[in-house]
Image 1 (spheres, rainbow, N blue to C red):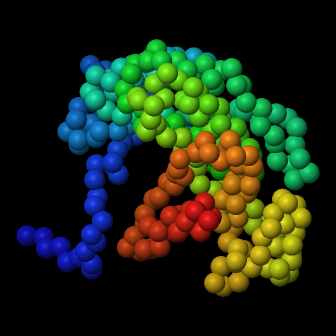
Image 2 (image 1 turned 90 degrees about the horizontal axis):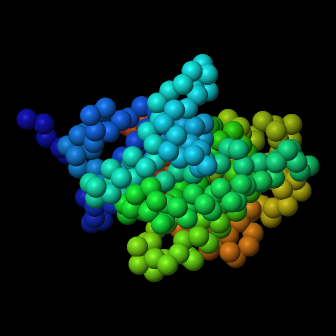
Length: 297
């Protein structure tokens, strides 16, 4: 018999709202063609995120969400894609709520600022049309838990933190406008959220290498304030006296939510946490602590 020896007991309730599943539109199938629905039932999954993670940025076309074939980004060969309507109808029929991830990668102009960051150029008509049709139940009418703006902007999104801030702030505003003006805004969609990604200092969004030539932390702070029109002080430093680049990434995103309409449009911040505990216990908490130090100020 296995015996659990908890280090402490919390009085905080863990309920079903904290659990859900991803469906990967390029891999998972429903009904006779797949087993996802059976597994979801067996696991008791009540909420599902569609169309998945990085594949959202590569393949999900808001202008043609029911496309059932897409081209593999590597081989160019056609691959199956689970149509939006099929997923939404399945979720409605089985009483599951949904989180819909909106692609962001293509919503930029070729114009850049002095730091090389691109400006947002959103296909507003397509985005509004997709959200309107979703809210109107054109594709099915499950409970919509959230619209999530992009997936891991620093990786599959292929953008900097500033760029993500620019595109997510405007997209969130547009989505919120569509929800707010829908006839069911105060009923069916009263609890539908709009969530954005937290900032990370990875891959396309990595910044520490750009400021490595400065000798001191104070010099880096001064340069960052000048380059990005920030008001950083030594509170951005780690206990070891170095720049907290993850905190900076979040501040850069937040800085682009520079109107009241954009700020009021979002309800939450998403963190993708991949725990490596017990080898690294901090992996459980680092991102959440970063959010608390930046977004909740």
